[in-house]
Image (cartoon, rainbow over all chains, first blue to last red; front, side):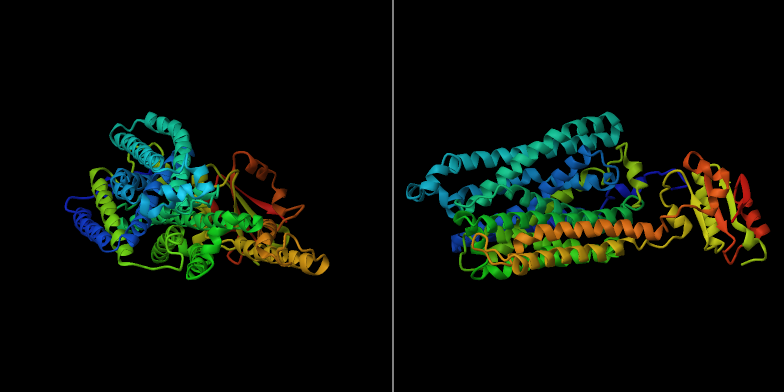
Length: 402
Length: 181
């Protein structure tokens, strides 16, 4: 209930001249390129560790951008009011997707290093791989990968462009159009992310299969974007931006979504585990056998505690979601365990005897992350930080949790 | 208790024309330090809890306690059934195969939480209650249609028949009446 009519404070919704994000963009780009070059140099030193490290880093930053895309699509499909104040930031995050098309290219060179099914002699010696070779072959893998990345980039580009055009036109028809397109786009997103998770991660162990695997990766993407949105809002508000736009009510909701995704991740992860444990079929149990023996058991236990039990108890408290310091801590923590989750998915088939953290893990993470941040900071300067032409913006500004 | 009025009267009922008037009046009544009073509206008004100075509802505590109890009872029940009452080896797994018991323990937790929410709500709203003194005021019937009210009880330490009625009029009440106990 507000007594005064709500107006959008125009000064705080665009980055001012000479803001620190321009510097961040330049520094991130330089650091990113240097770190990537260092990563490529490590390839010549030790080719075995390069591609897995690069894949984990690629998936981590990509999952944030994909989270941005599905976040935006879901807000349109559900005609959400609360999220309009933070939706543009997600649109900027998904605007980085085309960069991942370029960053994927090195992985095409690593098919033989990463994927057992890509070796002809392995396929010939293995009935199962022979059976799967109609799908799991280098040409199909490369083609599909390019298709996924092109589709995601186009979706992100189109939705972002329409939304930014609405800043000037204030045309409510844009919202109607995006709402109508969002539902089929979600379908396309679900299929492409599922197949991408099968191709890029699940096929690392080509005998293993799990139909819920795409949803598991989606849970990580959706968790990551809410953490990143909370961090972006906190950072911008520290710089006196988004004043009067993003309130504790929005932080509270981002926190609630983080909590929900912590539970959802555990729900999907446990569903996958329980069915495999119950059925006890050798090709399926191999996945968990590998991760519950040798050095991997520690990481598995750390994930259960760090990705579910601890954040569940922490985010259960209302005050945690409404205080800046605690929400920032929770968001950073969840991004860290999300990275560990991806590491846990990718690495065991390639390092059976346990985790070997390498220098390439760090440089690939910094390299891809640097380019991601550089592009994100550039996009944020090119248009408003809030969809100022959206007809639901005032609804979002006056939003309060009941 | 203030004088003889307390024995025969429940309190005062004041009608307001719009939710805005009700909201602003609630802020003033809150600031005047009243504790035994309530606001009545046909629909939820965002932020009215803050305008009334209400504390956070303890319903979530009921949900937490009963939810955890439900999950614990669900797990214990399955442990007892599977290891004591009817021990059967199924597909070569241990008698206490806890991963298989998690879904039912989870559902029992949901059930406990839902029951906790219901009981917490009923206890906080002091329901069920077949009659309330405010029903003596026939004017209140319109609260389910288009009218907004504030009621202040005589039991409130700050209550005074004249000055409280005057306060409510000053806050924009279009009608103030005494309600019989």
